[in-house]
Length: 288
Image (cartoon, rainbow, N blue to C red; front, top):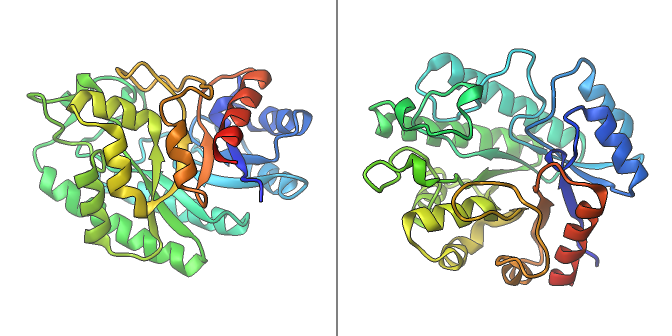
């Protein structure tokens, strides 16, 4: 059976959903991850439903559908309003995943900070609040609740590993970004203990985090392998999460054949159709 390679909405030049869907049809792309980065528009879910199985198949990831009044989704936020919005959004996304036949809803790991949309991708150590332990407790509580909601809807819940860039280290340590290392991920899985909880392993995040914290990325993959259900695939320089396209020589290609049941998602950003096809072909060559 030929594995299906999904394409993130972030891989397209536009942030508007309708042109993305039309580009998919024009270029023979029938597997799309509805993801962060799309622009809020009225009637977005109607567009999704219109193309569903004619011929589109979807995944639902993180901050989709986007909001008219944007916010930073954080399942560990100690701001009561942000935490409730994050949980409510995730429940909506879980329902959408079930509606479109997606096997899971995937969401970013929480963090012990309170950020605004304009803070994303920038140094965030000044946003860290003191009660990191409480933030982690809220994260476990959020994941536990959402895993139950997902199970009731017939889907899985996947947590995406955080990226720890050098500029977010505090005294050379990661002190506020959860689910970044193997220890973090295994602790979360154990603390929640839900059978439908798994890991969306972002190899770009992993490359940067491993360089920042000084560990071998393949070793992390080995340790968390039982929980890996999907991959976000992109490359970078090891210093920041650049979401660059990749070829057959990419460092992570040798890992993919060990996960024949996983879902592969291309999350390189702002690509030409030819670049999307090249990434697809590289993945298929690696796993077939």
